[in-house]
Image 1: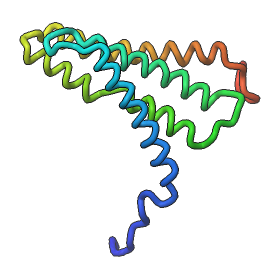
Image 2 (image 1 turned 90 degrees about the vertical axis):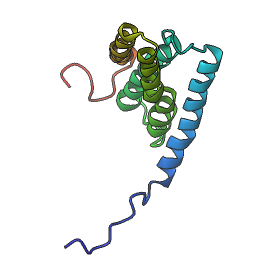
Image 3 (image 1 turned 30 degrees about the vertical axis):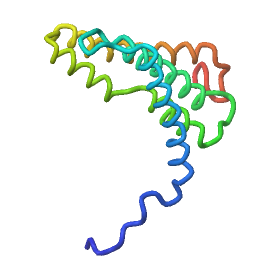
Image 4 (image 1 turned 120 degrees about the vertical axis):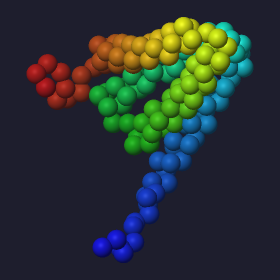
Length: 148
């Protein structure tokens, strides 16, 4: 009881971890570049982070529907690379949390609450709308469609 060695967690997962890591470098780099191009003062509404998270969620909706419901069989590393790596690195909960905290710290709790809730609503609406639009234009996979 409890004396058997556990198998290594990453056994056989090296390629997937590498794909997620490589994608994460690209996504996080793009997010950082957006912050440099459109910096937000600590007491201002964080439009850049809101836009990054909303666009990133829309792209997640497109990518996941295209990969999981598309007619083609994607490479098994495409989803971890794009969805988890690139888009997971591009969207940013940590900056969202810091931006919210800064608004509160600078005496703007109303704006902080608006940003807190607005980001969640915008992100959810973006992924929902983009997934729906992708489904509308995506040719049906065999076995998918009306009645399937």
